[in-house]
Length: 237
Length: 307
Image (cartoon, rainbow over all chains, first blue to last red; front, side, top):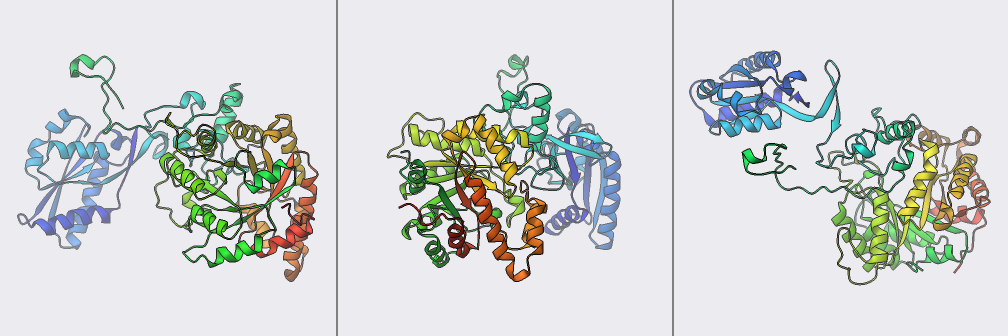
């Protein structure tokens, strides 16, 4: 899942306010807060419940700051899918700007579909992670396009080692198995070592791993296997 | 001879080598570099120049190493993986080599979140083992990564690595060191030794892997200035182990005699590690205490240095 967290309310309000002051549209600026029922909802950052609370707070801030803005809301199933964005066309038409409560991909997708409306992000997109517990998420993947988990006992050193080393651990592992960076972050390579040892695969981490291939080919595109004919191209990355 | 550096020659000749460390200034004034160079010249075989130590912005290690050369002191240029991608690293190695820098120490570097630029974008494009391998490829094959086009000129490097015998997981540390030796390390400088027994145990494992013959090991030495410093290091620096016997001595020393006690302890440690088979020298890390290095080397009976 993509995890995200709400920006500070003051930052969100400041974006809306400065747009209102620059534009001076009708008496009231109509802002449509668009929630997302996908990942942003699962991690409790931008689902229906969160955006109702957010709108309430923003309305109160607008009132006390005497900034004429009205907030309405709608939650789509996923902002990263074009069909779901069609459903809100009428509401978007009646609004002056959009406040997206999706991840960065969803917010951009909303902006691409309704390119004449300014889109402001209400969330900061954080990482690809897992649910540790309700309201607690941990990063697991950096989407490096070149997965090394097979060599590292299923623990990603690029994500979970502070220095992203492939030939770890570095010399900064503390006696309690945490990273020199602090905050109690576990040393990924200590975990890799323990797990490889238990799996009888220690020799594998003593091989010298070459540098990663970070090659980027512009914006990432994925044509999933089996869909090549449909889109007239293959490819990923 | 791989590099012809003074450090390499000293080790090659079988002398017990001594290196020290110098932190570049936080600014442009070359005077402190000259002053420290004068203190260390003739007292040690080479001087490490740190690369933005503690992830705090300083004069670059290449520039400072070049200044040291002007003052007749041989530098060991430290290069971290923290701030440069593979393009910058290789370009800097070529530039350093052209400036006459012969020794390079390949390290991952203190994480930037611990320094004065916590908002920096981290690099760590390659790791320290890969940096060692990259330096060897440049020297032996005159090739940069992913290329078969030789670079012009020679790249005579004596390639160093750091080793930490005292960091968790302990049982893996000798093998990790051996891996860096396989990658191409010619010499190593270890994390500072206070627990000689623990260090001797690591050395025994290193010897059993045969890693001490391909790579010359310099034991890290830090003179303690005070009990407070000792306690701070134990509590905050990963991979520093100070036995209670040393902590007790530092605590018992009167304030005005603490530094002398620290130097006494370190000269004892030097004499002990010198007896361990496979230890080829020492590396004294006395940042901002460079003026005490001659005394430390003298007390350890390591003066004069071989010409």
